[in-house]
Amino acid sequence: MKKFSDDFLFGISMSGFQFEMGGKELDENTDWFKWTHDKRIINGGLVSGDFPENGTNYWELYKEDNKLMEKLGLNIVRIGIEWSRIFPNPTFEVKTKVIEKNDDIISIEVDENSILELKKLANLEALEHYKKIIIDLKEKNIKVMVDLNHFSLPIWIHDPVNVNLYHKGPFGWVDKNTVIEFTKYGAFLANELDEIVDFWSTMNEPQIVSSLAYLQPKSGFPPSIINEKYYKLAQKHQAEAHCRAYDAMRKYTKKSIGFIYSFTWIDPESPEDNDVVEDAKFFHNYHFTDMIFRGDVDFHIDGNKKFREDMKGKTDFLGINYYTRTVVKKYGNKWKIEDGYGYSCNGKLIKTDKPVTEMGWEVYPLGLKNIILEIKERYNNPIMYITENGIADKGDIQPYFIVSHIINIHEAIELGANVNGYMYWSILDNYEWPEGFSKRFGLIHVDYDTKVRTCKPAYFVYKDIIENKGINNYLLNYIKYPYNLEKE
Image (tube, rainbow, N blue to C red; front, top):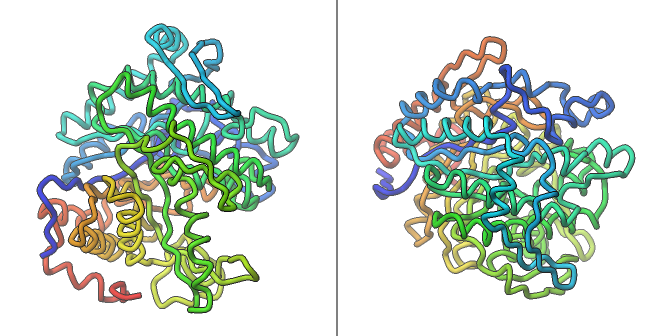
């Protein structure tokens, strides 16, 4: 048996926008809501045409869903709070003490008076509803990690249709004022919710937000334009926002504060491609995280680093999201992603012998162990949580996916990695951003018309793992049969 320690936390992760809507209470004040409803964006093929208001409806059905989480035996749940629900209108008028140096925001003070002014602007009904959701989980003996920002921004911070069509703002993370407003939001929630929250995460997958928005215009992520300068500014401002929120929240909480990043393991296609692997790793995995762990800011991603003491070490843990690897090939003096592996199997010539998910992603569990061990060495073995790891399929591969990835986590821990928990993505089928409802990641199937929940086979496999705090011998063969997930 692959046994985990008694204090290892098994859980699931959710977000706000993807799960909450589907009932009477809509949140129309986000960039993603406007983006997914705009006919020009739909007709351009950037989004599916599915609307989030037809979704899972966790907002109203949370008690039913939390019972299913309790029956699963979860130790921890990561939930997302929607900034736009808490502050549907601008908070610019609330003044804070901001210190800038050479166009860098190095300090933001959110004092008690600012908190009081923010409370006058907040949607207190939404705040109370989030409290009810968290308390209901806590009453079921489930720890709660609150993530402040999972992709979506208030429309008064970011209007992606304006940016896409007219090159006008508001510009979201491209605008450094978003750093200030986010810091206010984080401090406010820390003050209001700290008694019932166990862990805080400032943001989820900042590099995905930046790269898909400004480097991959066909990704469907708002605003879907090519602008390298905007990409770099969004990266920098998100890192600054995390650090400034970390400082401001620390005044109102003693709980752990971290951030969540999407990592991909990088393999060369052939030995001749080895010398570009480190550059690809830096771009995909460490450009952002180096800013926070080391204080090293490489704005142009060209090796010219600037050290910032105000950013170094501003995290108590690292949330690791992992889905698959990336295979790169040397292209002149640079690198390019090779089709047929990792994220690039959808509709392409598949060069791997591993199964491929309905998202077109290769199932590659060894990459998770590799990433964990590399982070262990790079950042002096920080506290780590696997905060997302999941698969979109009809339920056939899902049990094997879960077992094989958890085994790799166990092996990394045996090698000394400081991994304290695993959170599967996700408990329920939900709104998969530009893909809409076509991709199902849930342990529980959702009929979007009736909202009826039905547990998939993987729900019971994961339940077995949680109850036994590890993988029993009768599940160990899941990494070998039938999908050959044991080896490279």
